[in-house]
Length: 156
Image (cartoon, rainbow, N blue to C red; front, side):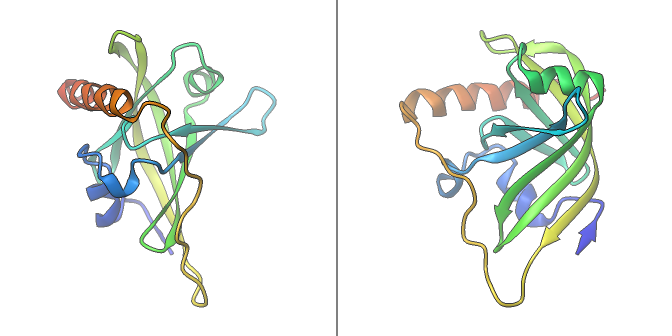
């Protein structure tokens, strides 16, 4: 199934409340590398918010390969497990001038182009890539600050 907007379940997941059920779920962010091949990075629910069903905002490390790829090309795909399926969100990212938090994270707004839901009639996807936080309290505090700052940025 394919749409050009985020399903309701993803809007709820990415609205910034850091649901305990998804604190350890990785969101794969693929960008286009200089060599033309996909380049993978990981986000958490603490690093991305949905502003609407067609608009995302996220913050990533300023010196990362992903940041360079998105500045150069803008094409990205997010992949995560939700509602028993693998969901891919294809979007065009645009770097904002602002940075956030004391880490000077680079902020991007991304316009959703297509959402592809991979669901099989014979199986339910229960989880994708997950991680364990080494200092959960510190990570959640940083994510709350980051989400608050992402939400406070004006629309462009």
